[in-house]
Image (cartoon, rainbow, N blue to C red; front, side, top):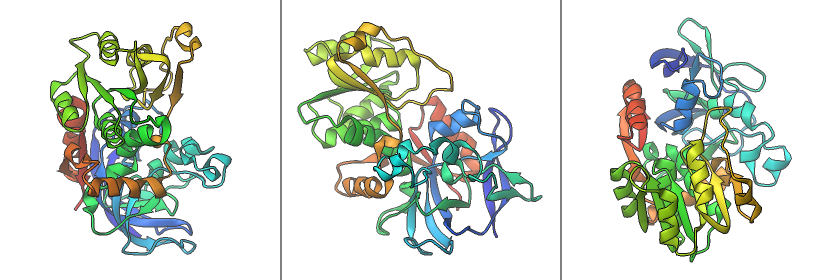
Length: 368
């Protein structure tokens, strides 16, 4: 049994409350991780507000990084003292997992959004021994300790700042992987990225790293667009001041861009992202909308060869992709640290508010 603190959301759209909690000993395939830093992601807020109906009360957090404290009896690839980044849960046995696409695991929703282990049990309880929702993204890492599995605890090198690495488990790898693994633009191609948050800016950095000829960033915040230029965007558009689609067509000089990436989860922005494509172009969708949100697309826009495809977790295999992103960061080609601001775990609601207001791109909360 491990005792510590965790941020618990008990009511829909309510604040996260720091509580004393207890974490069980790991089962045969589980690992206990002492958390050093956890990134705050938009999906945490979607679940807090019950856009995805994960049962409450619940310990959120799904971009954890820390040190392995204890491992289950059957864990072979990790040992106490290892530094790890926590990624998403997946079964490892279905066709998608076996074919190198764990983001499309047949059990993805239950393993990440059930709010419990697959058998319905909980790894966390409060000070009164009442069970708390856990296993969010197979980790629930807004706290002192997290319970993960051997599959989603990714061992990393020990000579990098561990407290910085958590966002590589979800938001940063989602943006970068959408470009590098899913869309795969060639060096001479053009891409327009809608939403200059941490996901969109990670996508822009990835596009710059592989030499895309035109990288167009669209957002409503001029300060974010300024940062986008620093991180590799060749053109920026304030969508609140200009017609983004018309401006993209002017910049492209070909009637549209080869690729677009929708990172906002807004149905109207998705329509813009499709309309900004040339023939035939591809739009990647990574923005998380509430369940049931629909977008209206002109069918003839797709008839002429354009494609829309959803992208989960950047189409990444975390054991491979997270170390690759760390190497790009060490080489100065992927400066995701420029997106980050640190907060104490006790200030998590301020971190969330700063993220929602656009003041901060990627908060990381530290429990120690």
